[in-house]
Length: 260
Image (cartoon, rainbow, N blue to C red; front, side, top):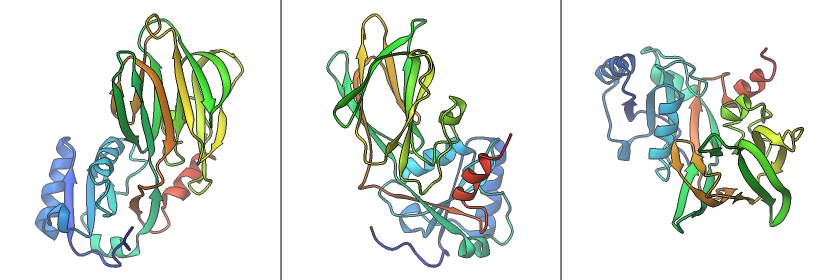
């Protein structure tokens, strides 16, 4: 991967559909100009966390960092919105490099799929009946049958999102581990999940897929009626995010662990 730029003068602004994001887009373009993404030093994403993930997905392979400004609700992945001193903020910004998960597998009808997830890959029951899922790690069966609403694999960057809501652990950004977290587990009832090496290869096999259908979701891409799902960290793709000085993603993840 080539070296990231040391100065950020060519800015590409992009915004979500919310009115406040569109207003912010107009204000910032009027003040700083608009550069095509292909020529930009940095992409400025205006919206919420969902739009930030969308922007990161769109810029995979472009080797351009993304600086988000919150025009949404939660904004965990975003910086504070302001039209002032943007160039100075970018020069002082701190980098966070993250690697996505790659989800591959087969559907019940024999189709194949391949998708990337920056936050998590989750398997979810499609009906009122619990899912039954066999879990293997690096080719070794670890759970013969998990009966649950589902299960997910989370990156450190995504550990404060769905993973945290499912009572999974918050993971420091540089911990080099992944979280394997059950979603409303019924059997084994007391299993809380596991921490896995970032090099782990996770395989989910769906038991009784016709009777208990399961969907697999990589961030916002859903594949329904899956039979087999493999998840691993991509070692060929790295994404760069920029955060205001002293407000890095690593600091936010650490702070989250001390928040009631």
